[in-house]
Length: 368
Image (cartoon, rainbow, N blue to C red; front, side):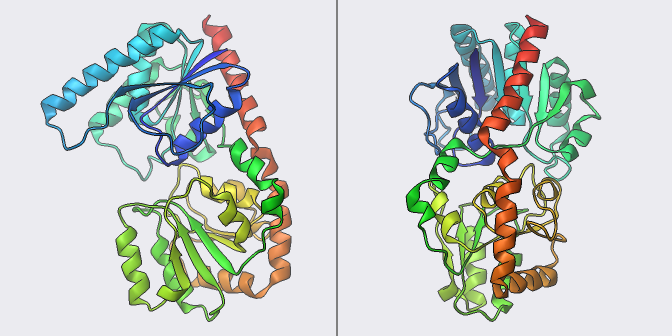
């Protein structure tokens, strides 16, 4: 099977991890290429057998409307050139803006195109013009993949229900392999609360910091992994609350496995999600987890009181209580940990990649 992935870039992010995870899984058995709209170095490891193309260099500064229109034309032209060159059996496109490009070019070349939406547009509102362009473009897709039933409900207003398929994200093979290494198995658990995610609106790390400041457990530390526009604001809050000696900002990391293995508790505070990749990874590593019950995803991963806790979005008081409960009860942490490992096995890459491949084969057969 000849498969071409199309995505804006390959920087750190949930969609980017999903693309590289699937591409790496198929690289040994299929002909796999990745086309990015801009030239970015891959944040995640890529199999050397995967071919890479890019349409344009990253813009170095803000562009004029005229330059933006020119870039749209050039991207479409390059995209068409690369797809003609590869002549794939199927195109897999990720993220809304990229999907619009991919849909039109694939349609012009009569190539089946499966698009994947990753955002939660009930909250990440689009400008009306973009929304109309997306809805019009999606008339011509082969299938739409979303990660949760909640996102399926959103899109069935504009996309035929028969075209929508729910496939959650999988745990990348690289993380699976790292979890099983002897080095990580021998890693000693420390009194660490871990949070992984970008520092941007909707992630609500401030709630976690305020909760942590109220907890009288001086031997516990809070570690954040990630970057983003709100990072300095969050750092200033830590200073203001006088807990700088107990909080660490470790930045964005390629190798997150060590942090998952070292931590004793994972806390996720998002107000909304497309799919909570970091929460899935933490559960896969057997971390007892506390998450806000935000739309969409956490309730699919956590069975409240069985492998973790769900708390209402923005409820700092309940979040604090649940953190204290897990800090003070090591047996409960062990029970949650064991359940987390068992329940997250269905998200291993082999299972998720097989769901994708079954969908691809159905589309290729129907449209060939």
